[in-house]
Image (cartoon, rainbow, N blue to C red):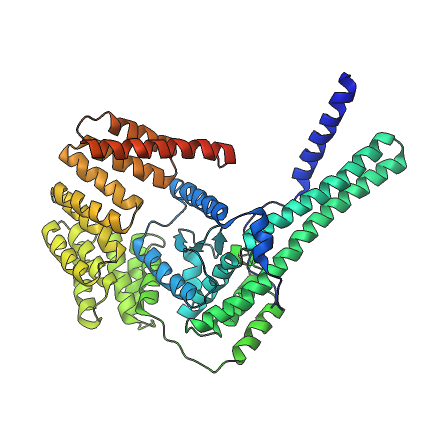
Length: 501
């Protein structure tokens, strides 16, 4: 009968809609609360609902969307440094069984976060706020622990259980409401409120456990990597003080990672269990902070800031301040003083890949392309893995009209760094200059795929397949890649990762 068959469907639809409205939203857990005792083994629980492969796939999808929207800081120097620092922390403990990628976010707000699958982001504002490399390392150590302990997977598992609790309570509430009467109405309201409270409390309980464990294991990771373990407590204490004077504009870090007196006290107590160790900041830490400071405000304001710091001798590292001044002059397109300050920097600073790279930029942006190429070639012999140099060299070659050399270099580097979108983009430009249509469209397609624009990637590869200037091997590579991308589009549609532009 129609009535008998349709009522259950409506009841189920109502239950699902209400449960979705009441269930807590899925999000990476914040960094906060006090110190933990031993927690249960998270592995089996997390594996049951959300596998490591699924986490990685979700994280990669989020990263593609972030790249496409401009949500990541496209600065190889900053990202190189974060990955060196982060992977030193990862290597310090045996619990990391996956790859990590660390990246900067072009946001002056104070925040850091972990995404599913080993992706860890840090706002530029947080890097600038830290007063030592150990403070920054303490934040990364905490975020790494969220990943290694699979906290996001367990959060999703707990929300599935909360959903079932909400559905059961809501079923009772709706059935009682159908019986009519004020008392049943009160009963329905109470059941709905109870289910909502249980779901929220369940999420809070899990969050506290995650934070306890991330504090404890993050401390162990920080110590094993050789950093100053007092830094975690010092950074949290300064954050808490700053939050008291920022009513209405609390930093994102404090909203998502509430700092408590208990957490600070526990961090300080843990630090007292180990011998005092003074740890000097690396030159990279100081220069990266100077580089980020050069991006703030107007270019001339950045120039004034660094010039005043030098004149008044207000700095921890003079070489880093001079480096920041060179970067500020470059941003202002004021090349003559940039060259003077670079010369002064090179007289006092020891050899460093960041100085080599910015020296090449001074030459390149001032129009001396040939000298820039020579400088980068020499620097690459000493620092072959420095991504700023790896990216700048083919760009300089393209500027010099040496497209064949640029394409060859990009192909060689893509063997070392497969899937690197920046190299694919430069290769596409080089092949366009050579009139190699298949290779141009193939690399442009791979660049779009790296950005997450899978439909755009398919369009480019279709153009590549029709280019008519390829051998059998190149055509086979394009056709194989087309099949893979089309399959990925179908899978994303099934799994709800959203439509690709």
